Image (cartoon, rainbow, N blue to C red; front, side, top):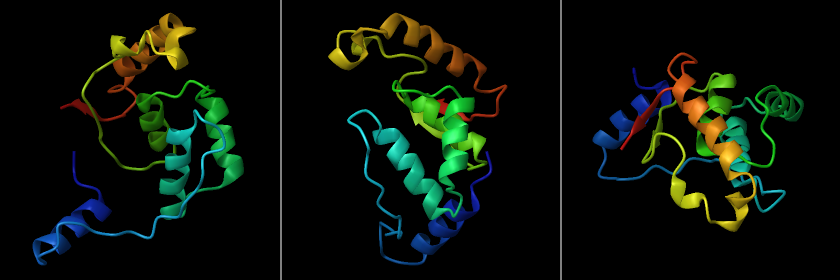
Length: 133
């Protein structure tokens, strides 16, 4: 995948300096609930990129059928929906079965496992770039 313009520019800038970090003026958007950390982070990225419209964001959540059970692959699809070039890196291609007994996931784990694994299976065709690390 070609590097995004921002990443490419930052990597060249860092190569010319002695710094090993870049501080970006990403706005802070607080979570509304205990379960929406990924959505809050997505809103921050989109606002930083000048692409956050609350109405469009809510419409995207409905279109992608994102409710209270948000997995990282959902966030990759959300970024793709908004045209944000990215690569989703994960340690597990699919659902990590280690979450099955955690209270947050327990009730709907089997249904979510099927849904999330399907998203991974369709990711390449949907142009959601991901890799296992």
